[in-house]
Length: 333
Ligand SMILES: Nc1ncnc2c1ncn2[C@@H]1O[C@H](COP(=O)(O)OP(=O)(O)OP(=O)(O)O)[C@@H](O)[C@H]1O
Ligand SMILES: [Mg+2]
Image 1 (cartoon, rainbow, N blue to C red):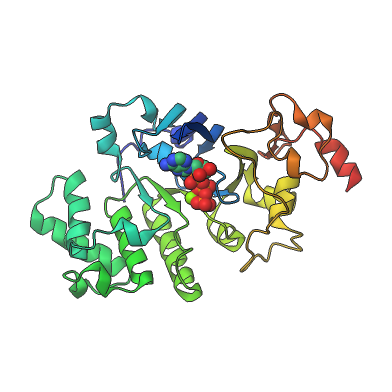
Image 2 (cartoon, protein in one colour):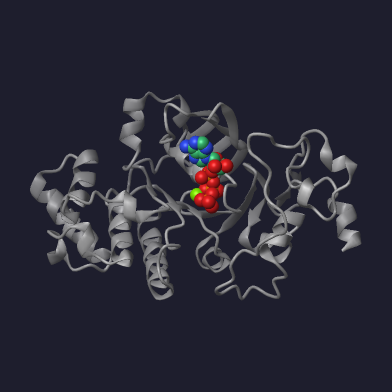
């Protein structure tokens, strides 16, 4: 278990403020993340949910500062344990990346080096961030493999000798090898079949408890949110349009987008509940509409939705929602 920075108050763990990410693509500016703010306490898990292209992966990559240098710009603040990561020199960021903060990528198959034995890949992650000998790194790699349910004597095999689910476990072993304080898990189970999904989730939950790791979990699966997360943030067109504790957001989904996405949830029994498709398409991120980005698809939209900045409103109990027609919609429903 990590003992570093225990003097930092849990409230100061992660605070993201007005995060913005833009890509330059074929002469256009893609506005992928448009002013995202949230906080995460030590040991807690926040789910980021939303349709494809909403900007979820861009948020995670911006926190870790691994966006492509040539095409992406990021602005805002990512305060991690009291320091703004976006203001750090690259060499200081390297001390944090893979050590204090690590990421499980959306596509595990491309996250592994196909020409390197898996044991060596875990050892490299350990050696990069810890003052240990090669022999100690090997012991740690063996431990990590056993921890994710792979016999340590498979250390010398190459990625192609493992099944998809096992490769995902190896990726998790690498991400957790340095006891990160923050884990960014981008669709960690989507590529896996259902039984393996359950095992991998159980594993992440177990490790999180054991190491008090905080997590930002990106998922399309409401069952996963229900089992794994404390808080939920719903992302639409690069903005958080609703956020709060899992209980508040599931019990009282308030934004018309969240309602559409969650469908008519009869109760909290969300096993195997996927996000519902909604009619229409998200807006073009190179040409976002004025006002609420969801207005073009929203059955409740009126003229007042189509102008100005739509702020998050405080609904109490830590629940926030960005909809200017919230009160009226409540009566219309
Ligand atoms: N390197 C890039 N260059 C240009 N545009 C990009 C790049 N990466 C992402 N985008 C665009 O930024 C927007 C947000 O993408 P992002 O990958 O963050 O979405 P996402 O919410 O993770 O989607 P998914 O659920 O499909 O993984 C999309 O419009 C996407 O096309
Ligand atoms: Mg993504």
